[in-house]
Amino acid sequence: MLISAFPDYASAEPATRVDLERVHPASYLDSFENLDATQWIDFDTFVTPTSAEAIKLAVGVTFEAVRRGGFALVRPPGHHASQENAMGFCLVNNIAIATRYAQAELGLQRVAILDWDIHHGNGTEAIFWADPDVFYVSLHAWPYYPGTGGPRAKNAAGEDIPGGESPTTLNIPLPGGTGDRSYLQAFEQIACPAIETFAPDIVLVSIGFDAHRDDPLSPTILTDQAFYQLASRTASLAPRFAAVLEGGYNLSTLPRLVETTVAGFENPS
Image 1: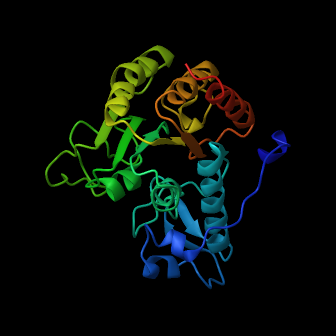
Image 2: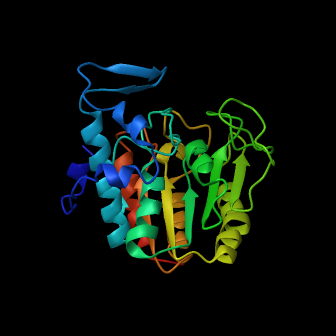
């Protein structure tokens, strides 16, 4: 349904195991291979006999978006997946693997990851917590699933992270009911200056349309125009940018929101 709304889309070659192993250990990836039945990992995350193929295709499309400066429309999403754990519908971390691809294959050493999903990208945060060349910025509802990214840094188990903060992690927790004005104000006044100070070679965006007011999982009330403005401003933050789909669960509004966001990327402010 989503792809049919974009007849000019481009496909891509699947990623390889070597690509995936830039982030995830071989033993973890092996757990998705040669399955003959669906297996549940947690209450909302499962793998099937086709998951290994889907993972490689999603990552391959994300690579293509990075090369082109495009928007990767993929499933499964990725930002909750850590190096060795799947959760929250996420099996591997698409944007983390794309970050390592950008560094290794495209020479883009300094990468900013900007996460608009309504849920905190705890997996992405964990992967790059101590990496001085990757700046992770997340705007998300809190307290909300997965319970991380609040005023004090905690891991997925709710335990304080040693050190309590990272110089290249910026979490911007927002209360339920946040609308366009407050969200965009936080983005413009906190997120954008921090990214500009970091001076990345590329900005990669984890886009979750579950922050929209019509999404069934959203505690916030963003409108279509907010996504246009977020995209437009993001396109001016670095010489290059690309985006990958994370959340978004209203299939009737999703094509329109993707189209609006792409239009914003094409008109930097």
